[in-house]
Length: 423
Ligand SMILES: *[C@@H]1O[C@H](CO)[C@@H](O)[C@H](O)[C@H]1NC(C)=O
Ligand SMILES: *[C@@H]1O[C@H](CO)[C@@H](O)[C@H](O)[C@H]1NC(C)=O
Ligand SMILES: *[C@@H]1O[C@H](CO)[C@@H](O)[C@H](O)[C@H]1NC(C)=O
Ligand SMILES: *[C@@H]1O[C@H](CO)[C@@H](O)[C@H](O)[C@H]1NC(C)=O
Ligand SMILES: *[C@@H]1O[C@H](CO)[C@@H](O)[C@H](O)[C@H]1NC(C)=O
Ligand SMILES: *[C@@H]1O[C@H](CO)[C@@H](O)[C@H](O)[C@H]1NC(C)=O
Ligand SMILES: *[C@@H]1O[C@H](CO)[C@@H](O)[C@H](O)[C@H]1NC(C)=O
Image (spheres, rainbow, N blue to C red):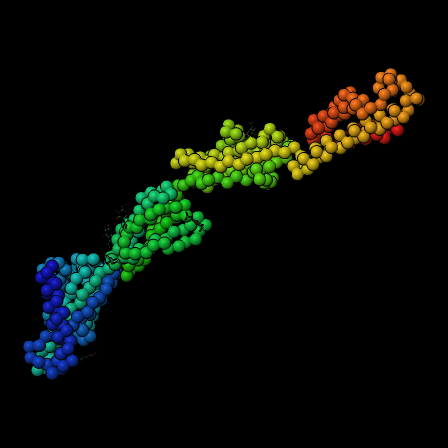
């Protein structure tokens, strides 16, 4: 190798000297040899032409030196009896001499032809024959073939690291690797590029889900691998609970008695979560949609949705509190209080009116008067506030207050009827 490098260095050195003097050799110094260097790029299995000057020399010989060896072989020549191609040249491809020149064409180029070709050409000129060395450095490139993407884990858990490798069947360097990602919605992005055939994707997240491929490029061509699917495993996230109808108070969600309440639980997760609903810590339903038809006040309490990723065996939960009211809740207190006060007032007025009526008409109806106040006709405040009367009034109030929801509706007519009929 060192010897070869030295040899090449020597060739380059003499060549550069030669080119400086080349135009001057028209003077044709005796014993002077001309060196001409060039670099030719070929592609394996294709054709390439190696030139040996622009005019046909009188004699020439093409030799080949493989890099890393000391071996030199002759591949073609014409030493006066016409062009010849050696059998050894067949290891380099299908070599032939182009007619009326000393240039050779190599078809079906073999990668073994990568190396230094030298055409030593002589021109019978007067007064001195000319000797030129054409040094042709042939670079044989191999196209990229069959890039294949392998991913260390196609179902990585969120947060982990994934290694991606782009394996090629063939391809000469330098190779540039481009890494592409197609998201779940079909957008393709280049997410990495470089000269390394492996990359590490650290801290994988759910956005890494999608398809991947690598594109390898060299001086000859560019090839893409097949798409490889990756699905990040994650979750469940903290669930979102949707309550329909949506009604929020300071104490949480609220609903009206006899409504149907739809509870929907959603937690981002892959694979998708399994859902379980709890009411006050006891399981009531399995599935994301928990519908409570004809809800009652006794259904007030805490509703918890538990999401479970069975693949990772991870869970998350969310709890809401739901209060069920029997009436439009902003009217219920005024209604009850109003009914109670109204009831009391009516009862009190009714009692007063009744007493006044009875006292005023005691002469017309002494039996009733006596029944109420006894036979002695005393009239005092103490006597007016009799337990029986009070008891009767309170009873009415209790009845009104006791039936909470239909109270106002029933209380008014009942209190009103004696008032209208009594006079
Ligand atoms: C020699 O000739 C070539 C053209 O044939 C020209 O490009 C080059 O500059 C010349 N070199 C010198 C040293 O004159
Ligand atoms: C491509 O690679 C295969 C094996 O990897 C090898 O047999 C074949 O010769 C290679 N082709 C070229 C053109 O290098
Ligand atoms: C790859 O690229 C880096 C910089 O991008 C460079 O330092 C390194 O030499 C390159 N390696 C090869 C083998 O080309
Ligand atoms: C990727 O990670 C592996 C180990 O996890 C390491 O050996 C390798 O060097 C890393 N590759 C790159 C390109 O960082
Ligand atoms: C995923 O992408 C979305 C939209 O671009 C972004 O809002 C979100 O933060 C990303 N998630 C992660 C874990 O990076
Ligand atoms: C609950 O109601 C929703 C909306 O009407 C419906 O899509 C869902 O199937 C219901 N769920 C059950 C378990 O009945
Ligand atoms: C459920 O819990 C709430 C308080 O969070 C309570 O008011 C309600 O009575 C409980 N219901 C049952 C049926 O235990």
